[in-house]
Length: 300
Figure (tube, rainbow, N blue to C red):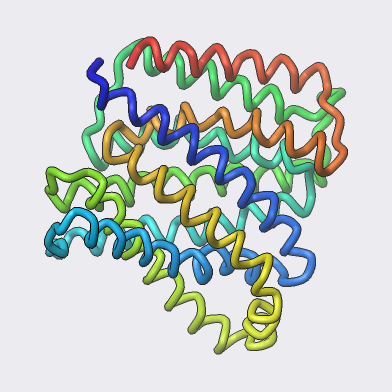
């Protein structure tokens, strides 16, 4: 593997760390802004930072502003729409289960990403990569199981919401990777940054218009909570920047499987910030996740 080939690993780890912080902040904002408001924060306050990233890149490199083909906007529309839905579903699930267990539900996403990537983008996977995806996903499934094995109606609701969120995140990853590839740029940093800015622009405009029409009180609450929202937006834009850089260099399935390390980051947040204890079952799941990630890196 070339030196550049390893960069997707670095980008993914940085993205997972930033996203964990952003998720924790959005979870706290849900109490004051509601699900819709906390969902919109990452897009509305993330967009200005994406513009700064793109402007800085254009200034430093002297590159020309990209001229995207029509199919680019279709890919970005898929990516941004699925991401909005996925984020809203994630915050709904977090309201019913612990932070780390919700993340575990969502992180069944890699299997779905691998399937969607094969269908829509023709992304190929080796036997070793498929094995790694299954092992790591088994880890999050183990972590998601409720102690005692009983599944009440109340426990199935957050499970289904979390799984639906994972599917939406999978479609979002495919949409954004498709957009990056459709630009046909040799500069993967420009391709990733331009796609990020385009996606956040569409999300910020459409969600702002929808909230001003349907829930103007929520928009006013978002403006009042600008201080914590600004940091959440910054962390969201930064994490997305690294996600997109990783998507530009590796298949979406590889990136999202390695991203399962976010469960480990979430475990630390859950324990030290929210006071949730780690069970033996969650410990077994963590071991499987680590084993799957190690195998993925070895097989890539």
